Image 1 (cartoon, one colour):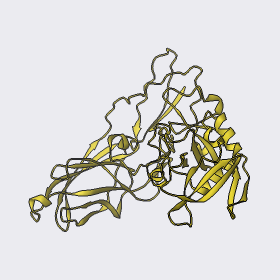
Image 2 (cartoon, rainbow, N blue to C red; image 1 turned 120 degrees about the vertical axis):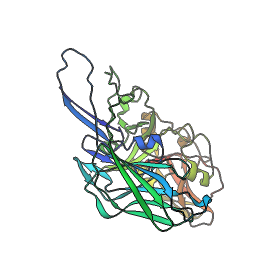
Image 3 (tube, rainbow, N blue to C red; image 1 turned 180 degrees about the horizontal axis):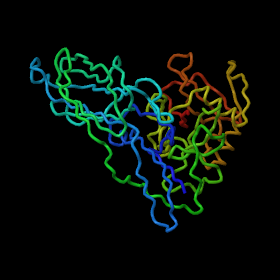
Image 4 (cartoon, rainbow, N blue to C red; image 1 turned 90 degrees about the vertical axis):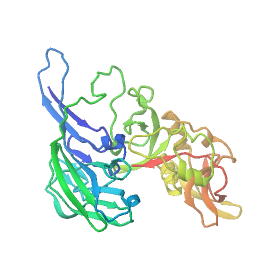
Length: 380
């Protein structure tokens, strides 16, 4: 039998493809940059465990502030805004792909002598003309180390820097083997009996399918039998090729004004976190795309002497209910309004939608200070 394994289990990662995260500022985030793969053929007739020793595909860069040239006052001997640059933004079929990427590293220390900044980068042949390290010193000067060196996967490179007012001196570079050989937590495979399929990527989804908190898509038939630890969070509500929109299965926990909705959406318990994506307020156009994709029909109507856009919405209601979502407020009367992120031409007002009698009525005169209902979405 031939086994294949890769890490991390994030959107866009596979045995042959990996997109390097630009934000590696925490232990959880930098772990998602530690790309590893393994393919192994073995005879397991005895039924014992299969141990796969994964091979790292990235290189580790550690920038250490070794000291400061005697040009600063004591309170200026510090750095901030440290960035490390990767020669490429991803890996495709074992080769670097994409352009140079600025990495927000994992920082340890207060910016003074001895502080370290760690980033995982895509290894390559090097680029002598590219930025490699940038930082701001204690006098607010931006300083650069030019030239990304050649690096190999599975190795760790420590650059000891001395910082001056006008230059950074690389005092020494240490190269070590980064293959620690430890076992990944949660790496033990278990056969699941009667559980849902492992799910598939959003790019291969269909309108009406369920989106789990793991960022994968599952059929409606599996909504009550998702893998352990996975929560149903959204529904694919619009699709165009490999891209589309996901709508949350439930409203945010409470009504809120438009500014709050546009800035703090997704903090309520009704909108579970989805790995790799961030919930936000749908625009007017995105609302209409989701209405239309589920059997809606766009139109106009006269309201208070003004012609306003409308859209039937009962198809979206039905799809949400089938997916196990809550569409009860979308079925109510004239007192229910949902925010969009689209500002209207009227000062201090925003477009919101009022589901009434099976028709979504759009209003352009709702002050942004009003409290409306909020249903989150994200695009993929």
